[in-house]
Image (cartoon, rainbow, N blue to C red; front, top):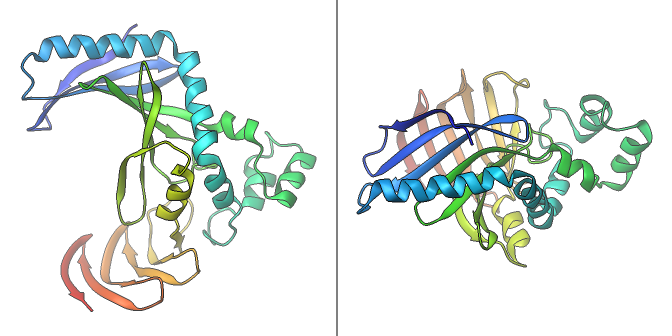
Length: 266
């Protein structure tokens, strides 16, 4: 296993971290080793983590398959519904645009029409678009796979699968609008909790690929407004208003160049 540009990071006061790049399924991905500076034998732990990384690397076909199967089992239902939730991004492509334009080289017209009619994104294609962006090894012997898909079905959900060489994938971490959910156990209740945590949809009045500019709105799944405010050159600017699920104003925050300067709670 060759780790390219392998070096130690000096950014953290609490952890020692090494990072570099490896080739995973034909693509270059970022890898890192993270260990507490309080560890008694840093070099020994570093060697243990390198062995875990090497085992993953040498068995990447198997682990890549596990990533895709785990994503199908625990994330597919929610992400499928999000994909067909037209109106969440009025200036972004809708699911119709995605199926018949952006993905037209991967879908026949008949496949696209069937998916659009039934609101079912084919699982084989769902698996195809998912790939590993980075891998982090921790001193506890666990690791995290960052899973992305270029905004097709995973969208702007940041997802990390927590795994162990002996036990496979055990938990997942992901971003919800107001919080980061850390190491939620992968069990029969996971999909329900994931749906609940990510139930707020965003609506951006900006063009695809450009810094967010102007009015931005977030909505709860019941279509009530959750947050509204303005962006200037991609940064929050001015008064942002926050509402609860019943539509009641809960607070106002004044942002200056993306920094909260003043907050009023109701």
